[in-house]
Image (cartoon, rainbow, N blue to C red):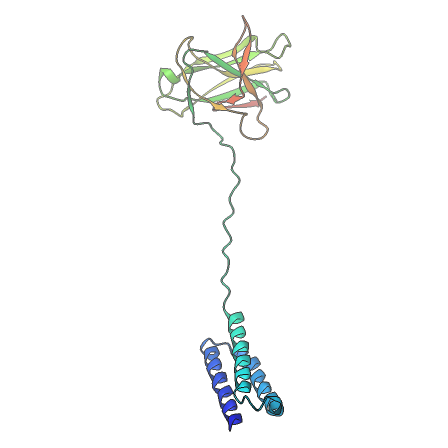
Length: 242
């Protein structure tokens, strides 16, 4: 009698597990493990005499555990694996094209010019653009250019000077164009001596690749000593043409 009870228990367990699988539409699992259950029943029917007779429920317990274990593993592997969302690619942090820090000169100097690196001057017509940090007189300037006539690598001769530019709004650009056949030149801007001019200034080398300007600027120019500082840069652009 207990053999029949074991078989009935197996079928009940199988039916329960199959119902779970049917409800989840695991048709492939039904085919695979259905055949497995039938194989287990046949194996048990041919080898039930090997189970100890003193423990009639032991065989039932073992077979039930086998079925439960098989179907639980199937259910575990058939669960949908959630897709991992890849984090969005972060763009590299490029250097800012323009500096936004407004610097007060406080009358300490009234000119700064940067050398155009040797070989970067590709034409005799030079166009310089500089951005105004504030509106009005305090943000006004002349665009200026110098040459190195002594060969010591320092500015010593003024080549060109624009009118005094002012803007009605901060962030406006003024531009100036001049022509020179000098090979080594320095460009920048100047403002009235002793005035607390407002300029854009960023500390560090010029941003961007292949910038034609050196990183240090001159703030005193002969007559007298030629003094430099930096590295620093401002909102200035230069281009060359023939």
